[in-house]
Image 1: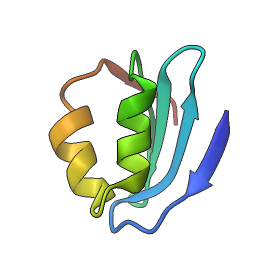
Image 2: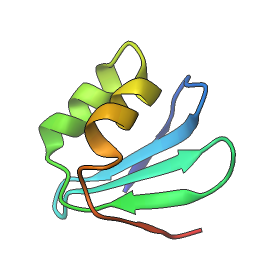
Image 3: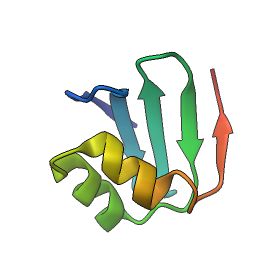
Image 4: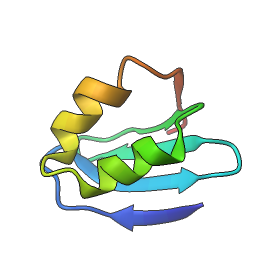
Length: 70
């Protein structure tokens, strides 16, 4: 999984595995989460969003199953 550091108040690092649709979000406050079944288009929009934290909050956070991995 390729991970990219981003400039966001809440999110530090984003990773995506297109084969499985797994989106990894590492938060600045701590905690790394895997979100399952995220379409690649959603990931691409997240990476281009003006406010990645807001996009994550409104489109991803409560729409896809997740688990905390660390």
